[in-house]
Image 1 (spheres, rainbow, N blue to C red):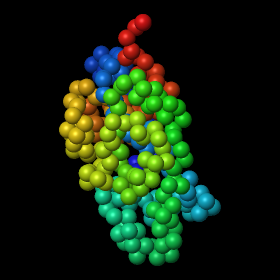
Image 2: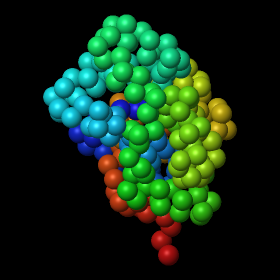
Image 3: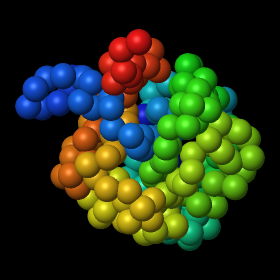
Image 4: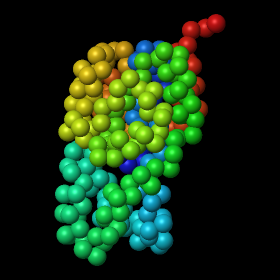
Amino acid sequence: MDEPGDTSAAPVTGDPVTGDPAWLASRPVLIFDLGGVVLDWNPRYLFAQLIPDEATREWFLTEVCSPSWNLQMDAGKPSAEAVAELSARYPGQAGLISAYWERWIEMLGGPIPGTGELVAELAGSGRELYAISNFCGEVWPATMAAFPVLHCFKDIVISSFVGVCKPDPQIFALALRRFGVTAEDCLFIDDAAANVEGAKAAGIAAVQFTSAAALRRLLAAGEPAS
């Protein structure tokens, strides 16, 4: 799954031409990222239990089970193969490397506060919702079963099933075709600035997620005045 996103860049708050957030919020189709937007995924939830020393833990998650290594599985590499290769490079860490996938579900802290409720409300109101996620397909069924909010989406493109990851514009073009929607009708929401830029490169309006409350305010800007 996507590493926790870099939210240091200022989020887009409106149409780049008019600066009007209603232009973004009124897009009829919403496409969500999952990790960092809907689900709170972080390897540290698991490895805080397995590696008590913070410096050692950060070294392990930066240099051994690194974001680039994790991305291999998101792109479709079998986890058994990836674990075997990495364990051969770091034999002293083999048990911890295996735990990364054997106990993957323990990296999920739960839903992002407020987003699950917002997604359920949007689905209940008839809003057209989809998702695109960098995700290992081997753990996808267990994740779907654990989080009912994921069933609010009409369809979800999982990177490992299609062999391409965000921020590559190809995954956005593929998703548009599969969802049967046009870029002009969509707003994409992701916590990672690079993925926001990837969506824009594919012609999709996009905003960087910072909190459910901020997203709720943005979407309210597109609601017709009562």
